[in-house]
Length: 382
Image (cartoon, rainbow, N blue to C red; front, top):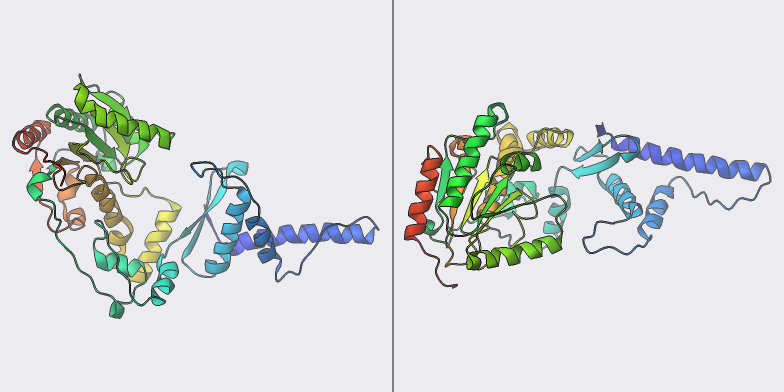
């Protein structure tokens, strides 16, 4: 449910007024009054300061940030952005378990002023593509920016990309037959890959649907869950390193934008192949609708879908595709299990130097993998 910023401020003021009324009543009846009621113009900011100074020990994962700090942050966000269209407040959950989540729809409101105070900036990333989109979203003026796209230093023949044309996670085409075809592609990929394979999917529900019944002889299956900790991931990395030595490779399964698809360095060639199932478009939501509307108004209808949906989704896939290639000597096969990757809406979101090989079925995936790994060996780290 969408919430107006003025409503949240109104609720806070109503609470302050109720406290003030109690304090006034105590004074009138001659009772003891220990309540301080600051002036209405400054009381919200004073309240925010009190909340910010509340101290608590943060645990290792940073998951126990006190509610006082979260409320202070919300008040700060309301003060800075509440009067404009770029703030989206969403009530999630029900009753006492519900919470207000704030979304700033325009990163440029924060980043733009920072860049204006610098003499110059260099922004670099393997997934900073297309540069003009990120420049727009960060509020960089066109007259003050330049861009340069450089080809990947990794040889294309050492990281081929294959697209399966017979599967998709498009909602209206999902079903038992389509899911089974995806499983068969994964099975053939793993069968014909000498080492560990990682597969990433758009959501935990799809993850469970696909991998619950997958069993490949001689291969250990490890499926990510929401409850995995840093300790679990550390143990996983050890298992991935040891698996080829004991002759039992691992099939690792996780979600896009999750713990396994970003931020982990799979160095030393511990992944031989990556499969990317579907296209992780953000699901329909109050936030996504607000974001789309804001981008459409600010950057025009022609940029609406790409800026808000297709490019972020493809960039998530690119992040996953880059997991196995960490050094010049690495080699890995990338399999994209959704035919939409070759359609213009999404193919234009990939870097221009990526060549999409196509297969018609799971047997084609198996043959491609077998041929690739028979010809291309991993070289010593460079």
